[in-house]
Length: 194
Image (cartoon, rainbow, N blue to C red):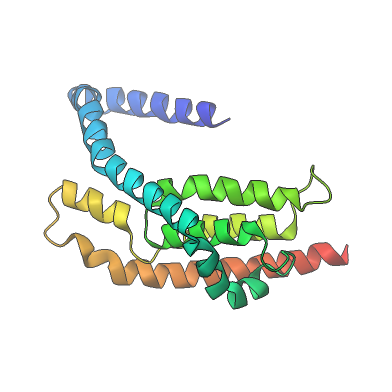
């Protein structure tokens, strides 16, 4: 499905460029985009490697367990279905912590491990549990306090003040996370009544 959507976007862009007489701009973008994409990748990739490595060290050192214990009171409210001390809480804590630091690509492995771990306690493997859905909602809401990846891209493109977005990011995170959890809770209650 996504391939079709992107295909439509590409064809529409090419047609729009031809109709408006901007074929030169289109050619320049086609020629210059790969090198820009490579530069962005090369600036972001080391950051992902460092955070993935740090999180694996934290896991081996038991820091993730301490982090999940620290966040346990909040997790008991947000994820009431997960048993106390379950490994998925550590993975969820890691995923959310890395997301809060704005390195979203590095959080993906921990998100996948959290979902796999949540599926281990799922009685119906063909249907997502409330905790799985809530975790997905939290990730989709974009829990970010320090948008490290965006700051890195802004620095790459010569921003005078790449960290200027921090207050906006924090405000947006608070609003979207609270709103997402409220909607998740309302929809869960509606579904449970059915």
